[in-house]
Length: 341
Image 1: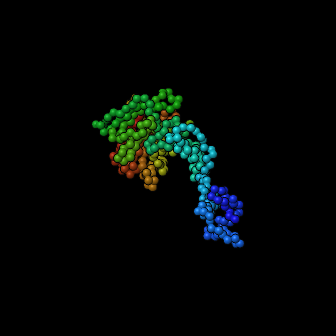
Image 2: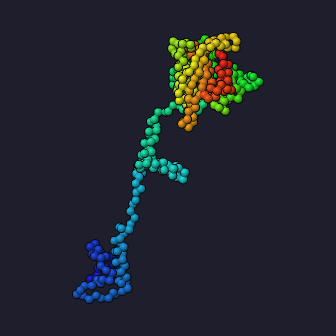
Image 3: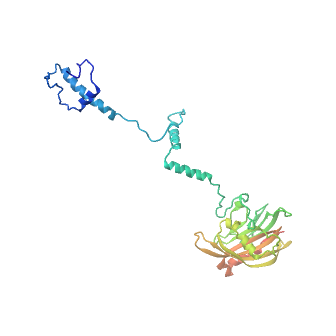
């Protein structure tokens, strides 16, 4: 009559009957309609019925309450199983491996950018203002004027009661010339400062107004002498974007040769050579890129082995046209320029 045996016995329950028992209310009596229910014969029987019903209900809920395995969404099957100290290397190694197999969109974008950067060719060196990379790293400059490179001993001496410096030194001769170096000299104000000593060129600046001097070299047009070369060639060569003046940081908006004439000059009173004097009119762009400054330049050039060796001194256009101290300084610099050729 009963569905369960005594305390010491094992439950004899069919699966379907167990589910029916779980669905019945706790107060429903398990009696046959024709046979009166007899009271429990012992306390054990009473607790047995209640305990087994509670056990069955708990067992039915176990599948829903049991924890389910979770996944972080990252396939870790490719992780290495290296040995080593777990305290020191394991966390970082694990992080690096997870990072390498991360399949997120951000990781794919980052990998694409890194691949794009790696595939780009190395960009050419961009010089800082007043500084140039080694000449060997530069492309062919063609007819552009570059700094005449210093060669051999040279130095400064005070002249004119210390108000001026006299520069005496040597520069490299052009290819195929009879000597490897050429002596030159010139005078300039003693408070002007040297620029970019590492480039090997010769250039000085007046910090008060930005006036400068340069010693330049450029190949003459093929088949043309210093006197035969058109005057437009010199402005185009000096302010060529491939030349050292523009590459050293001077932004030139426009330039042209306004005057040109041949003059005689002597180097140290012993060797005399013809030279050409030119006047340049050009505009420079200021640092903010919105304002131009009109300037003037005086240039004296010597011919050496098919090349023009030039001294260029620049000044503000307004001050130059006033014919005051600034113009006198510019003219004295180029007039003092001599070469022993």
